[in-house]
Structures are given as structure tokens and as C-alpha cells.
Image 1 (cartoon, rainbow, N blue to C red):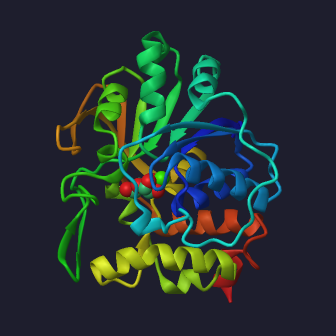
Image 2: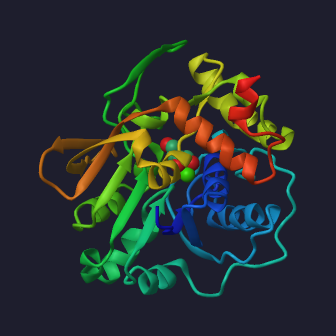
Length: 312
Ligand code: RIB
Ligand code: CA
């Protein structure tokens, strides 16, 4: 496979962190830059976290451009610092002086670039509002967001439907900036959606956590505490790395073409058929989690390769 040239727009965020580490350690991906958006925590926090994730794995050569803030945060899920109390030091390298909007406007006209959006769509919407003509030049956008209720599971709270996680109808990334999501989905940009219908199938068990670097396992364990307490399950959803896994390993997923509509309450609706959107509705969950664990293994953050461990 040719290397995919990728820009990640992100609000790290614990699951964003795993997504970034996966992209950095995937030979099929050439990570060009990170652009940050306020979401899980403030724009200052998400930018600080993007920089220190890169520094932790000695990849400070990947530039970070700071963007805009969305309306909501999720500190109750990701902790006050956005990485569940991660002890990694701040990066010695600052964000670039150019804004994320300026960088994205400049770069997205280049061919062969995929944009992965792992947070609210505030930055991309700002680019499209400033330059609507860019919509027909952007090759591909893959987002984590939305939910279509095609999957449900029983938990302590009763039956959890894959439609919303902020409200029963709305998922965080869409809910945090509904008008931005509407701009993106009405722009004509080809968007592939990785919804809760996928990520709520990819729950990380305690057994899998134990096979990780203790620091990373601790960060994830604290991040999953929110889901465990809310659902009464012993596992938590690993949302954002699904976007990176789909870009590198589309064979792990089933996509349906059609048109996604953003509802006034932040919900998402989907009509299958001709359209410029795709929605992922099925995933090989174990294959996905093994793929992520293997990426973490290559990052040096995990003592052994997951498949080797399973063979024992
Ligand atoms: O609903 C899950 C999404 O919201 C993920 O991107 C997570 O990081 C939060 O931003
Ligand atoms: Ca995110």
C-alpha cells in the first residue's frame, strides 16, 4: 500500500493520544501535521497535549498548529489535563506560529492528503466558511463522530444505544459544535464517518489493559472509569484510533455510502444510497484492537507484541 499522507485534527484527549501514537507508528501512514481544536479540554490544553505526546515518542519534528475552540469540554471523562493525569513532561518544542486554519487552508488544496478529524469540526468548518471552493479540492475527510443507533448493548443502566454519549441522541464531537458539523456535511466534502456504532463495539477489557506499558495502561484505565461507572461494564470504548485504523486497514470495516444529515439536537441521520458520505457500520473489533496494540508495541510503549503474547 502507498503511504497515506495524513493530517490529524484533534482534541487530545486520551483516545486521541492512542490514535496519534498509532498513526506515528504505522508504516502505511505519513503523518504530516497535527492541528488542534478545543474539545475534550481547552485549546490550550489540547495543544499542550498534542505537543507532549509527540515529545514522548521523540517525534517533535511533526508540526502542531493550534486552532479554535468548540463550545463544550469533557474534562469529567479525560481529566482536568485532558490525558487522565498523564505525567509526561511538556514538549520543549512549541506549536508553530501559523494558525490551524491558515495551515489547513494552505495544505488541503494539495492532492493526496487525507484529513482525520478526531474532535469537534470547528476548524474544518472555519476553513470551508472562509473558502467554500475548497470543498471540491479536499480529497477525503474521515471523522470520529455521530451515532446511528444500529448497535446496542445491555449494561448497568439498561440498554445503551449507539446514537449519543452526551445526550441519548447526540455524540460529543458533533454536539460540541452542531453548526460546524452542519457546514462540513452540507459542503459536498467526501466525509467518511466512524460513529459510536463502531467505537462502542471496540471496548477495551482489563485483560488487554494489563498487556500495555504501565503508564499508558494507567491513563486508559482512568479514562475508562467514566464508562465503567456509567455503564457498569469492565471495559471502555476506544473511539478515535478507529479513524486511523480505517485509513490504514479499511479491510477491518464495512462502509455504507449515502448522505448524513446533522439534526438540530446534534443527532445524526443517515440515508443509504448515492451520496458523498460513507458511514462505517461494522468492524472486526478484535482485529482493530490487535492493530492498535501492535502500533503501541512499535512505539516502544509496550513490552511485547500483542499477537506474540496471545500465542503463549
Ligand atoms: O464521542 C467520542 C469523541 O469525543 C472522541 O473523539 C473523544 O476523544 C471525544 O472527543
Ligand atoms: Ca477526540
